[in-house]
Amino acid sequence: MAFKVPRLRPALLTLGLVYGLVGAAAAAIPPYEVRGVRGAAAVVLLTAIATLGYGGGVLGPARWKTVLLLVATVAASGLNVISPYTGLAFAFTLPWVAAVVVRLWSLVVVSLVGVAVTSVTLFLGGVPESTNFGITMGLLFTGAFAVAIEQVVAARRQTEIAARARAGEAVLAERQRLAREMHDLLAHTLSAQIVHLEGARLLMEHGDRQEQALQQVTRAVRLARDGLDETKRALEALRGDDLRVTDRLEMLAGEFRAVNDGQLALDIALEPESLAAEGRWAIVRTAQEALTNVRKHAAGASVAVRLRCVGTWCELEVTDSGGRPGDLADTGAGFGLTGMRERAELIGGSLLADRSGDGFRVRLRVPLGDPG
Image (cartoon, rainbow, N blue to C red; front, top):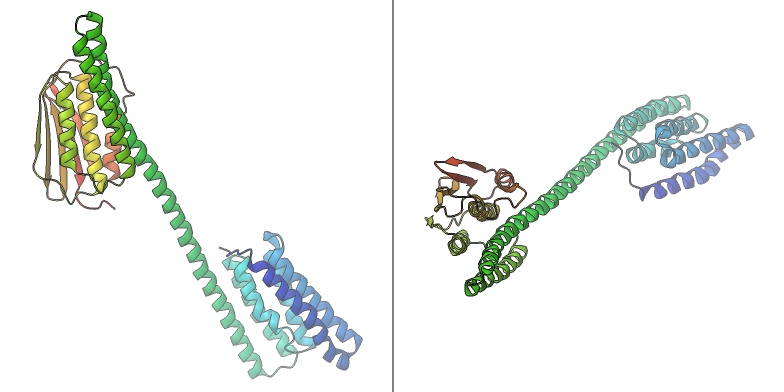
């Protein structure tokens, strides 16, 4: 994987061009003194080719970068035949350029070709074997170090990409969680209001029970205000660090008793202090949804709500005795149980919803502690 850093490219290009211009002028002098105009012209030509290949490798089309860098390598190495050591600056620089602009395999090819042709051209240029060997080892080390740096940078980029992906998933999960919170909260609050308002409408149709109808409307208004307060609390404390399950279940039980003909028995041993925020919200919202379903489909039923924590699990069970369909039986989209099950699975728990005698049972199990 190529490590592409746009800000480095102008600097690399400038470095190569400056070296090409200055190097060509300086390197042409000794060959001119020894071989005349042809020697100087050869140095200038090879330096120009190396410089153009260098610049094309930095800024050229992606598919040609490797070829252009190889052209620069061969041309720069050819300088060593005419004037020994002249092309070494390119030879030592090109592996680092390749590490920035091409993939790993291209970097290896450029480095190995640079080592081979530089060693051969130094030999042809009359450089002593010991010196040639030292330069060759230096080029090998430079190429290996460039490869190692490229791998480190590539690994870091992969880590950053993975971190951004995880952050995106976390944001999406938080949005989905907020959507579930709002759905459960509004479904519970609005359904209770509809029960009161529907009751008020039926009382007002008789014409002689105005006081009772007014009480129903007053209760609906109170539920609306409580729902608004609950929504604000859910938004302000979405992570649920201050949520006490026992308090919320008692509040839900009180609301249910106020609007339902049946009875509700609440059995809570202790506040599950070690339960994570997600688990606490899951328990409260599942209890809300289960009680809403009782009002819709089992009006007049007796309900038992039990919360127990044993071992590494906390279990909520809501059971009703069965009853008649309520006035709200046809309301809602039918996604309540699906939402509860998804909420439980997201935190490593499970949800069971099935018949229990003449009634219905909802059983939620969530893990204690931090699910992450």
